[in-house]
Amino acid sequence: SYLSRNRLPVNVSFSGGKDSLACLCLAEKVISRPEILFINTGLEFPETVNYVREIAESRKLRLKEIKAESSFFEQVEIFGPPAKDYRWCCKTNKLGPMTDFLKRNYPKGCVTIEGRRIYESFNRSTIGSVERNPYVPGQTTLAPIRSWRALEVMFYIYWKDIEPNPLYQEDFERIGCWLCPAALQSEFAALKATHPMLYQRWKAWLYDWAGENNLDHRYIDWGFWRWKRHPPKIRELATEHNIDLVLGTSGRDDVQLRAVRGRSPCGLEYSIEAMLSSPQNHPFASVAGALPILGEVKYAEELGAAVVETDKGRISVFANGQIMIIAGKDEAEELLQSVCRTILRSQFCTRCKICEKNCPRGAISVSDAISIDGNKCDRCQKCAKGCIADERARRIMAGIAQKPKSSPGDWNRDGSIRE
Image (tube, rainbow, N blue to C red; front, top):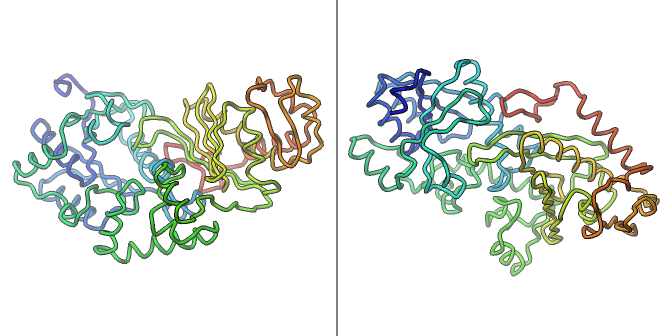
């Protein structure tokens, strides 16, 4: 087996859920008192925290409880609520703390046994039994139950005569962060019944956020907050009941950029989730009209969202300033600079029309909003020559890149604050 040939230290990632419990049982068959790693995000159910500690104590295991330095409720004020397609919190409260712990405690590398399964999601359907973590140098992950189904996992646990997390008896399908947007809407109903204080705290925050963004209360009550790009059925439901899905803008006079970077534990791709706060001199349609300079654009006015497909990756831009980029690490950083500069350029635009004259292909027209014809534009960037708005945007982005490490909202994947 791989473990018999391996000379690196071995640990088990234990979340308190059924999958990691099954992996722990398997690990105990070949490792005496394995070290278990539990990431306490600050959003775990109280029952889960107690369960993990009880399992470690009863089985005399070495428990390492890893905590995030940043509070979720501080970060959410910057990035807004997480969503199924906007999981910034996985990096600030999971991946960052874990990466930092492994670097400090396993400088020569380690092998981590995880409970990931191919039947959990499309993202995990391609995971291998043994993989090197590309974003945590030196870490190799093993997935011994990758081909198990959920029922088989529960059968194995009961066969081993171990009581699983008590939350499974309370109608929770997933045991993780209690406000996770990936949870079913029915699980939020269960949360209201079993943990009313937690439920009310999150609901109150969401209502305040909805009010600040001019959203109908049904946007919260019906669970629409769980998406950034809403699926067709949700859009149909919103249209049928006259619910606006477009978030309000920040309306800031200054410019601030906050971002989290890295691979999400919930996915396999590198991504950047960012919030750009800037003056709103022009409507979002002007931003969408300028984005073809970066790539092929799909703009949904009713959602206040635009998706840009480039040869380096995908960029999603939202009317309230949120940005999500999926690409390789270096490419993602380059795309972040480019899209922020383009957004600022469109907002600072004075409608002088110099760009119209500079474009050799006649791809730009400027009236109430900038409009770039994606079929004509070859992304030569000549339109930026002599553009006052672009020069201002470049200076601002250069200044942001040179700021000292003073902001608690801008994190690397390893948990350190990014310059």
